[in-house]
Picture: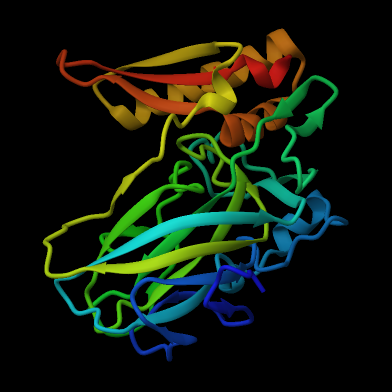
Length: 313
């Protein structure tokens, strides 16, 4: 158990949001909690897994979150202040192209799996191949509260009270604010990642089980419509040192622009660096960033895809 933590929660996982799920623990505001989180496959992939295992994935077991935690005094209309204190990675991860899932699902219909083995202590860049190493930045992909609406709600889409946000910058030191909709807030966390690009374009990051330490506190009766967060400093120092390759998509539809920008980067990585299209797609998901560069010069908008050159050096 973390010597700084007031509670440790493990073995209490759920696969959807439901305000009727009994709390795993009840805590006072200001408590620091150690969560043991599973990867988004719920342990279905291991170090021995191969691409042949991807079609066997049971989607009823994906994206488990640990919790929920009932915070004493939390009421609808409050804000839960979540301070992400520390991440303790496992050293194992995976990235997959899952048929039917991802930004370019129509272009990549076949399963593909990459298993990662990284140094959990040093967090040295993870080896993808002889010509690619991905800098790591652990974070929680799914982090949220129970909704006011009764019943079971899928854990897959993000929601106004958080959930599957997949925001890379919800890393150690960041403070996240979530709107409370039910008594006790009912906080859960999971879907931990060792690295991800902004956009998570193939649908998966470096999915990795790990422990997370958070402090939960309350901001009473403060309106908040959607999650917001504050970072402790720069967010891309692990990627910036060698600059970027960037491709663009230009047109009246942002989704089409995003697809065009990513497709162009896959072509560039394949032609200039010798990656298969499938491997280039996975690398884009774990290390590259989609950005809206311009959204005012109608009728066409610009989406850019930035790929860090440090991965290739």
